[in-house]
Length: 256
Ligand code: IPE
Ligand code: IPE
Ligand code: MG
Image (cartoon, rainbow, N blue to C red; front, side, top):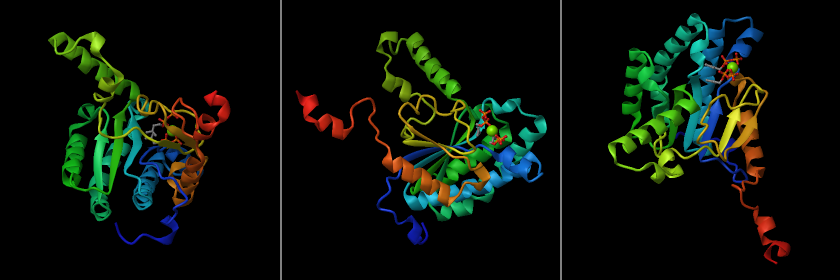
């Protein structure tokens, strides 16, 4: 990474190792400016580049961003082709910058069902960046949490049919290791800009104990200040994972 500015020097902040972002609100951003929705998506791409840099400086290790859902195919054809064009252009265009910051690019989702030219660009971007170690940027493309879980279930069912495992042997860990990118840790924090209080089929299996943070800022306007606000709030969260917080488990009443 280049020289880190002072504003990233925040030892008081707890930084998530793994962060998820639902990049929502591009259409509303464009509408407010009387621009076509495609202009909103383009501005959203620039915002993603900013986020990568900021996450790299803050020390996030895995950043998973929701770029296109399995349900987004129901949008008008013109919007879909503008998005596909943007994907093809961006993965190549931003690569020298990503390289400068040591950012490895990976994809999560039903990539094999994407148009061939997109698959090629994705493969190229993954291969080219495989040796970079500062931050992993995972782009969820043609991604659906339900499809990911169904795919994992299918793989395990096939192993049962082959006789490699028995149905009663299937565990949560085996499900986890059959998700798209099993080596990527579950998100500690999921941010959703644009005010919508829903998960929209993002990382359904992985979000079991993720902290959620919703912002009213539209994705193309989401910058350093809003990211810092999210981390400030995350720092105050008491993650209990079904257990008790430190204070409660140490109280005399509980040890009686
Ligand atoms: C998110 O922005 C980008 C994609 C879903 C591809 P939207 O296009 O959903 O923007 P809004 O929600 O209409 O404002
Ligand atoms: C979620 O946003 C998907 C992405 C950001 C890629 P949507 O705009 O598709 O979600 P809904 O329709 O508001 O739930
Ligand atoms: Mg939306």
